[in-house]
Length: 308
Image (cartoon, rainbow, N blue to C red; front, side):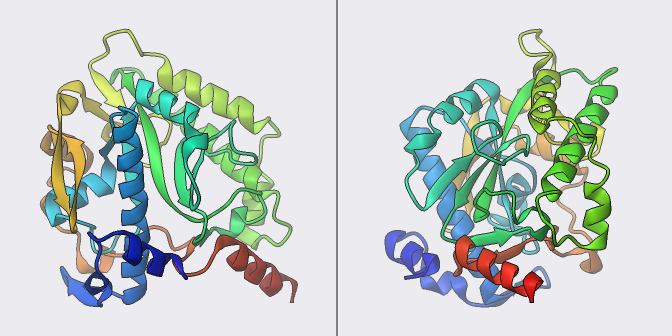
């Protein structure tokens, strides 16, 4: 039984009809994309169940929050999900990571061997989302839910910290590439720029920089451990988070901050507007997402391809 079959059998909220190909907002959603979405929905439902059971607060952020608010589900050209948690709840979550049962696995730096991203991921280990650059790093690369802690943050004079966090994240990414002897030329060039610094020292510095304003009464919250957004789109007024509500998301409901409109405006500007047709595409083309193939099978196939 594949994970797609297992999820359809175990989740009455998710029906086989969901997997039918369709066009949404002039973007074609293939059956494969729908199966990836199905795995992501299963992950977020398990995460929601787990957090509710342990009294942990969480909410959709980034593109997932935008999807809930604008599309009542996935942004049609998106293929991942992002969750945010107050720092205290995030830290408690990490102490409970062994309570997740297969096929779910929570990964975090310092707790998962070889994993040096600066945030946590909940994986479905019976699926695959291999990034070839990191294929030999040793941790499972199933389809995942990203989980970010939110820390208090100041807006003035802090871009230097943001830039430093970005440098450290890139350095760890370059370090993890070094475990793959079959890198492309571009990835090999990146691996050679690794600073030589212990990646856990980088993680600890990122944590110190991200947490530095906690308890100071700073007016903003930021998922500062990750710097994919431009600096001024990476922090949000605290009053965005005065309460959590649940919005429809495909056939279920998921939590978002009550001030999601202000949050999305800070991050995206006019978040109601769609991007031009030519910019509607996945941001994860470097990952081979296979919802019906296990990570072990996909890794073996990748190894065979590079050794042939």
